[in-house]
Image (cartoon, rainbow, N blue to C red):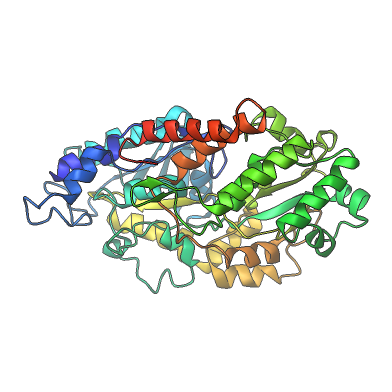
Length: 477
């Protein structure tokens, strides 16, 4: 039964979804909950002593050890590799996919997220983990928030406490980053070096032209709530700017502030805050204040440049630092032309979590990587200064937020960290569920038809319900 459950959890079909964490410009894979068969199995009477304990060590040759000479790391882009290469003590790079730590060879298995390739590869390899040769076993792998529970709630991830990462080690990490990778039995199954609180990233030239000033206080007063945000959108349109590049820019802010889950008692549920996004977006699209382009499309990213005439984007530090063309001299980021303020509501977007694979033969090394890159305040401060990342250490970030020597080039030499620090304290994951990414993706696709006038709201809802129940046939509406 246990093997059947895990196979269903890890083999269930996926669809593409929004990129989280950037690094690839393609979509990141969607997380789906277990298929109906797996759900039924999980609820059935136990036919062995451990059937109801999803965090127990799997049966067979899965005992974690320190005998390994090859550390296999599975990820979807170069972000974590750059952090380990640049900041982990003793790491030596050999080539693009190999390195060494002491006498251990490090092998990078990097599979892009396009068409769900990363998860498919990870799933297939994890299913063979028990029988794999020592040098072929996965030792650690990376997860994103939107599909973390798919892996966290299985036996393929090992509690970090069993690796030797203690509660004291992670005490300074933001609570939401721990909530994302805590399983249903309360075991912490991963850690992250980064926090991803979001802010409203605004075009300072547009702010000066339309609002009369480009400082954060002036802009915040113009976007302090959604009614004020919409009123400012009308002013921006009159001046030739779109408020946002697309209606989808604001979606994650609304979806992060719901008061109920996408699925309640087995039925699809549309929270009032999701409906509020629909109503505001339809008004703004009809008024020409925003567009309907997909995130990561050329139309969406046109606003990274002055001639794109977009006032603001919503995102965390990784968005502006790694995805908004900061390496292109013609971009607003390269010219230091963006500003940051809190915006109408706090939210988060993305993040990357390090998980130890059950059965690793490099358990102590995996634990040390976790401790050094996510618990060592000196290394985490170094990451902020070197990479402009927002790190998962509250004392380090609070200190950097008031550090007069720190500034960000993309923000024109100001220190944006106070805004990020304010936002991270407002993140609430109490309504997170396994169905989130599938529902979010399908809902945005369906509502695009409504926004563009190709369907009524009711017809768009039918498209949404059909799409979601095709993915998750166990759901009703």
